[in-house]
Length: 253
Image (cartoon, rainbow, N blue to C red; front, side, top):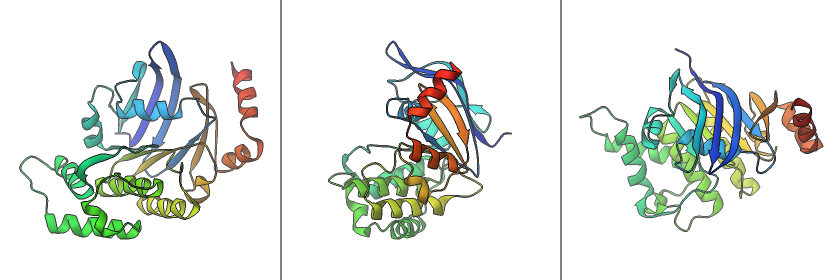
């Protein structure tokens, strides 16, 4: 069985407009890949479509996790199968505490009849919160309710750490972060890197990749990948901007 997140000839539309066009990408477990591209090129659409957002229609193609298609799975089934999405703009959920939310999510992943070990859960939760420099008092606070941008992003990475996904998609995790928060979030992500996690980082700017160094970088334009390379490709984009990417896409058309 292939230990990869594989996207095959994926086409995605919103209404009557096709956003993702014949998109292909393979992210093996143990690797971190980054997708960069100008605004409006479909990066966040790709993330939401893979997670199962109902506003995005899959017209054709497939997405496979460890060799099994996930496109017919409901959103919660994709999550339980091991897919995690960290949102660019995390939602506030008043009345639902961080601890209760994560505990319910972990419990949903247990085999039928098995109970969650509460002391072990809280021990792990506090360890992860300490790593991400989240005050332990936040366990009783409603998710993202009144949080700063940095607190919201750290809460996303806390959920990722506790749920231990097979594949994680981080959609513009660096947006709205000052340099200190960026370093903390990056340290959290780096601590989770390993043979059992494949990660796809979606970003507009190179600065995040100074802290989370990717194995591969892909440049996305007009709904598909136009160039792939190593971490130096991100530096090239930072130096040149995205105009040359548009020319590259035109030449390929």
